[in-house]
Amino acid sequence: MVAAMTPENAGQIETKGYNRGLILGFTMAESLLLIVFCLLLVTAAIIVKERQRAEDAIKQLSAVTETSNQQDQQIEELKAEVAALASKLPEVEQAAYDEDWRELVLQKDTYKRIKEVLGQKDAADILKRVEALIAAEQRAADLQKANDLLNEQQRDLASRLTVALKLLESQGAELAKLSTSGKPHEWPPIISLAEANGYFFRSGSAELSTSFTDQLNGSISDQIAKNLESYGADIVEVIGHTDEQPISRVNSNLDKNSIDVLSSRKAITTLEPADNAGLGLARAISVANILRTNKSLSGITVLPLSAAQLILPGDTLSVGQAGNVETRRRIEIRIRRREAAVQ
Image (cartoon, helix red, strand yellow):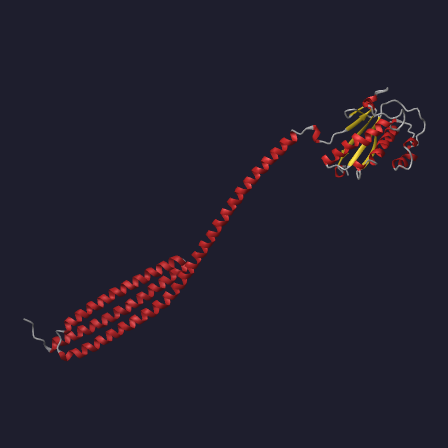
């Protein structure tokens, strides 16, 4: 049996409902303060570390959402409880109860609006920071790609450089091999025209024999021209060598006449040397004049030189060897390039 409702019992129930409303209001206010405090913590965490702040903010938002869901569930439970209690209240007290309920709903709406405002502001800030983090990560990824590409190019360049160095080393070895295995004939050959081989001058004179002149204009000029073409040379050196027999003439006129004879303004017989050095030069001038007039040697510089009695055949210096030695009385013809001369 349900006890009869008395005015005193009704007043107690009304008081309890009012107290419960106040408690619920305070609870919601405390929850609001807790949310604000949590958001402040999230903001402080963001200052410490960008990425951690974003993660913490998301976690806090998740916690707030969960709390809100829990509160919504609690409100629904309270609604059910209030509805159950309201069914027991007399109709005369229903109006007062509805008024209290409207106040609670208004407080709930106010709480939601405050939460939405605070949540939107913080969410916008968090979104900006998250976007900044994403942009930074993208830049880091781009830099990493560029670094990887640079490293790949460096490896490719190093590989090419290694191949080039090996090729250069191989070519250097081949060049060294060719240099060490070079043959004497790779240098321009020296043409030696000694009396022992039939190339005569008149005794004590620079005048050429007829046969010597013919050979200079024929086979010897052809051989010189061939050597000049083969070795890319443009200078012919004619060197006169003698033996160590003294000349019986006292005075020499080479200082006076050698230039005129070399220029073909005077005959070779004009020259009268008084020593072997002069005789060697006179004979070199005689041969040089013949070669300069040869068509096959046109445009070639011919230089007459004298080695006197100082150099033996084979390019060795004489230590003194008197007497009539035909092999030492000779003309040597050498060729070279103009730029090869010592400056």
